[in-house]
Image (tube, rainbow, N blue to C red; front, side, top):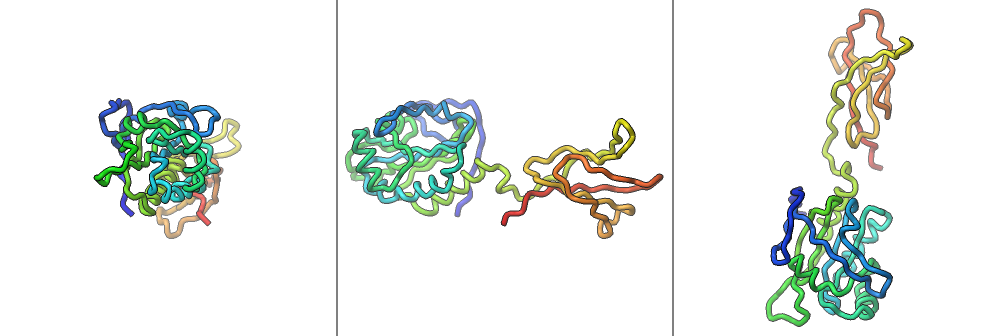
Length: 259
C-alpha cells in the first residue's frame, strides 16, 4: 500500500476551475439530501472529518464498487466525529438516487443530489453521457477538522488498495495517537515538596497521547540496576529520598497496549 503525503496548508482559496490539492481549503457547498429530510452544508462540519464519495448515480462502476465505501462507513459508523456522504454529480432525480442507486450499490450513508456544480468545483468529471475516453468521474475526498483536503483522488476503478488508503488516513485523523511510532519522554521532571512539607513529589509535563507513565530511580546512574517505583496516570509521583541521597529519576511515557 502506498504511503499518503499529508501536507497541511491553511487559508488557501480555490476557484471552480482549479484542481483541489492535498493541503488546500475544501470548496464549500450546500446540497439537498436525496429523499428529502433537509440539506447538508460542508462548512457546518468544521471540527469534524468528512469523507465524500463523488459518483454518477447511473454509472455501473459507481454502483459496483459502492460496497467498498459502505465498508468504510460501517467501520466508522459509531464515530460521531466523521461524516460520510455521497454526491451525485449527474443531477439525477432524487427518487432515483435514493432508491435505484441506493438499492443496487448497497450504500446506506446519506446521498446528496444536484451535485454537478460541486463536482466541477472539485474537478470531477460530471458529463452524464458515456464518453469515448476513459474519464474518471468518480472521486474520493477526505477533509480534516480544519476544512482542509487531506486526501484527493479520482478513480477508474475504485479498488481495495484505495479503500485501505482511506481507512488508514481516517484512523490517523480520528485518532492522532493511533499511528505514532513512539512517545517522547516527559520533559522538565522536577522534585517538588508539598506546602506543608508532608510529601515530596516528582512532577513532569504530560506527554500527548500517553495513557500512563512508568517511574524509575537509579542511585548510581546505571539503569540496568534501576528500581521501578511504580506506574501512574498522573503527572506527579510521590518519592521518599533519604537524607543526602543522590538519585536519578526516569519517567517513561506509554500508551495502553493494544489487545
